[in-house]
Image (cartoon, rainbow, N blue to C red; front, side):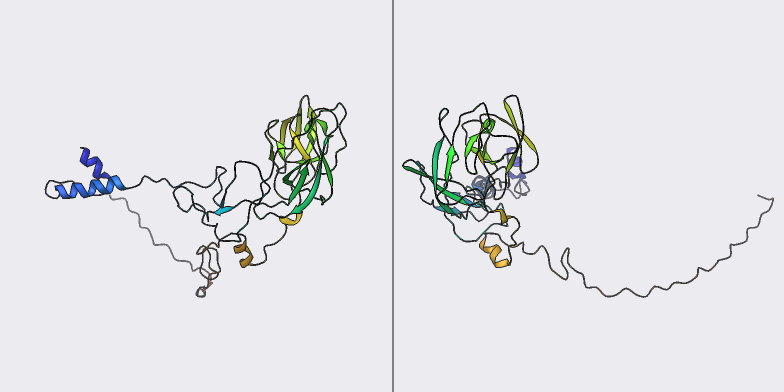
Length: 297
């Protein structure tokens, strides 16, 4: 019975005439050496485009990146066929935590430079805080030399914030455009990172703040969650055409080979011979056969 179970997945018929000691040994070795690999599935928040090598401490130095080309880093199997090639970019490490004082005047930060990051859609701003530097996501009209403010103080009257300032949601008036919203206080900006996107503060309910996300779905956050004021930069990203197949390869997207051909593909134009002429005539009346009835069975 054990041998039958062993050879069930090997499609070998276990019979006394065929089965020998050598056959059992070879089959057992092949079965034992066969790796039990499970092909991973795309999705679940896992990226198969690149791996970023993060150091132990935060730095503004561009980080080295290993491109995966759509493969699983553990098994090496192809998961996403449409990923591969492209220009090699370095990663700018974004500091998602905008911490400020809980009382008193807000903390002031100065924008040093606006950069374009190839690993994300929105632009990146280099900001100086005291004697430290960090990267944040740049807003629509942010430029070098701007002074932005950060505060965790929740005042009684809503503040009049400028673009790029970071405050708790409870301190901002209704209708303010925000991005980089925290899920829980102190966890760092998690929502609204894509280029040109923003959330809108709709209303306040007790100690909760209702924010309309870019998907038009309302989310309820704690009034102590931090958010950055303004719309994210690079607004034209979503409406700019790629322009050519070669530029699509520069972006790291592989063509969908074999799925479509112009003249005989699945959704292509089919070139077929014309159908024969259909003759349209008036239907002829066929006489019904005569039925003879008699009284004899």
